[in-house]
Length: 220
Image 1 (cartoon, rainbow, N blue to C red):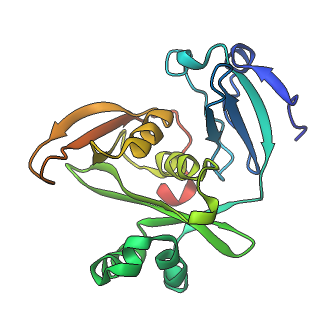
Image 2: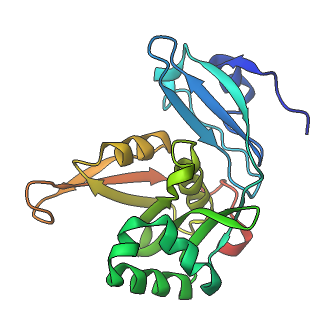
């Protein structure tokens, strides 16, 4: 596939329905005022995500710059990946309970890893314990690969693999980066749960998944 022009306005991207990237490419959004960046990645399955102008309206005057990226494979985690999952997750390194939980998630085929050159760059977990709906319960990227849009790519991969029409996730009120991640992935606020962590309520997020969205073969 021939790469698109290096720079393209968002309006043209929306018109052509290509707010995303083919596997191995990415989009970097530059804010003309403060140079804030938002990376939008496509999933490995090759589906084209078409974002609505309303959800990206605040980016209308930005410029999009195509980024070269290593070939990244998204696949279910296997037992042999566990040491690399622990290495990605500082909490797992310090807590046996998280390592046990990751073992369960891998055994139940709930964990998806992002792999490049045989190395796990990050992982995310999709479960169905939230009233029978898909729920992103964990997203973790190795320290050396953070800030490159990989977390967003993982979330979008889970959205494509999800077998329900509703996808949820949650994070603490104090976790601003996670809230920005979910907003970038098209989630909207869907409630607050108090009394889980003292003084730090849990924000619920929701993303509608449509029947015509392509499903990954492993999710069917």
